[in-house]
Image (cartoon, rainbow, N blue to C red; front, side):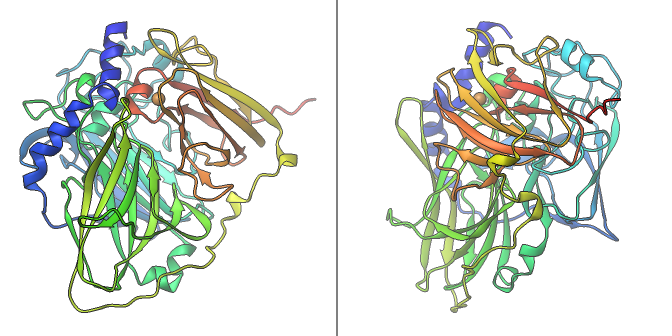
Length: 506
Ligand SMILES: [Cu+2]
């Protein structure tokens, strides 16, 4: 990626293009109001969810625009997949995108499923990758990083088929996760096209009566991107789009007065970290939102908040109790643009109407998850420091951008570590690591609702740092850490992590 390309990429981060969102909101103001709708949901049969999908161009209507974008089965939002802890997910992916269109050709030439880490790294170019080459990541899942599980350093070329097999551990934290492609260089374009869907892990929390009685609403929040032709064929067109919910702009969700619903929210945007609040129409008063899980990890107890911060990649499981009085409410987000101005948008309209349906709002402790046992200082076996940098051309981790010559994080299976991630670029970033969630020790951002929260994605404030602890005990193999601002990830703010079985000394 040359300097000009990167700077254009940065311009697309909503940091330099502040005028565009306003225009987009104004243009779309008149076409809001479609009823809330969800993607089709699929569940396991006999312990296995066998899901087949084709990656293809789909023609869809998107708030008054005709778009032609890459999607799972051509949809703007992928189907919802539901599995219980202990079940298996088979994700059968057929790439029917055409060969060789709309892309800068990748220099990696290997068959799908056979690309080695070395080939991937040596062949990588930090620019527009082959946008029709893809793969899959199950974001947040605590599963093996080895093929055919959550191995993201592989490619599924046009015409190729691959079956991912994920074994969900019986003690997996229950909550909301999501799936999306992870082919380096094409992640922003493919997720921005709508290649993301909710992935629900069910568990003990779902048996709490007040939670079980609440109607579930899946909300995949996306910033779908498209050009003047309704297409997305460039990394330079990713910024400045409003949030949609399951592909709809500010849809209208109905609730009865006093009703409690469980909202499962996924921030599947390209790069937007937002704070959500629920307010009556024409008022800034805020209704409580009761948080159960963040990033699929249950809190110790249900905690009501008025401001719910979700960085790109974060999820929240929340309960919302409709007021006793009928009326219209708005779920709005606030975002601070680079120039300091506050941007806002109505993400969802909530219409409270009809006969009262007074339901109890759960407020007690949540079932603990054994693998999320707090990590004490005495358990730490190693500490390491990661520094996000910018060399004037590319983003770097500890001075080196993603690629073959980048040192890797080598971890011994069984290690329990404390990591500090510091930004020196002056840009806001986030930190996401595959396979293992981490327990937050310190975070200046507002994402963490209680001390010791487990997350898999966390904001790294500009020129600030975060510290967390994590266990590398269940899975060896190779995976990645990266910034979840997708253009940054595509631009090299990523690093390989190898978890190696310890060598027994003779
Ligand atoms: Cu970043």
